[in-house]
Image (cartoon, rainbow, N blue to C red; front, side, top):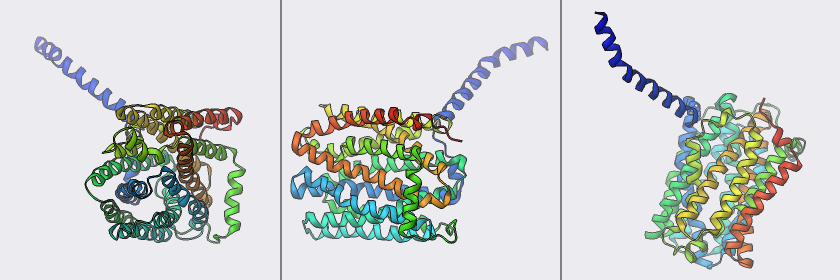
Length: 432
């Protein structure tokens, strides 16, 4: 009996070791795999699904509009003007929309602004089907779409802390950013296929259909009245939000570094021209538009570690500098695969910085200011790339696409490092 037990134990040893090793590998993977805990909350899960579906459609339009503009004008400067058309309504309505989000039911505001954004997409579809061929009309529709986005986006972000506990905010931001970037991969690639075989109207039509996802998710949200029953949405409230930011050096510096990264290093206005002149057009434009998001998705899927980092400010600065250097390298790449790879590295760094910027803001500011804080956040995050479009287009017209692309990436990395050293509050930050 004893001999048999010993023999069996010897036979079971390797299997037991294999089981334990498999358990250790699963544990290590769970430490880096994206944290899906926020999806346990039904309302957040609906928003996550609706946002993911609608984001896919929106990215088709984000590619189709600059492509259509370049087809009409054959000028990267006109493509850069799309950023200007969106910048002014973005700055105005992000600040105002954030104040409104602190004063009214956030669910109703999100629904109204989403309907306006959907209408702008239908307008883009109509002008493409009717072959109007007007660059000015494209600029106007982009302005309306951006106005609606400037209200809906901060409202949606201000809703998130109501739907998940504070301990899961970093994970929720990683999830939201990852699904948004997944759409930025699938959308441009799908747009490249559609635009190679069909007219831009096909991309606008898919966007219009997909946008119903966010409408469905918003309708199913519970009522979200303001935390402060006496809140208003006037100029004084907007000034209060701006004053809060100006009195918080941590938030102010995080915004300044992001502006430097996006204005100086965002190369997307150059993609149509570079795809045509350097990479032979075809599906190259779709790969260029998708590349940054590919890296962001891969980083998001392995973002389980982000919630455990204590030196979030240091991580933010390193990520922004890595973004700038990766973009600079892509601007010098002579082959499409290398440019896509380096842009993907930059996208991975950008996801890390985006998650920490959003988490710091949601943790630092009180709920009664979240709408205004998110409005300012969206003005910076979405306004920076639009200024970057203008900067890239104008610089390319004067010095060529390589100088505009690579030079901007180097400048962004250097400026981010100098800001962090000159104002070390961000380097010292640790969440409570």
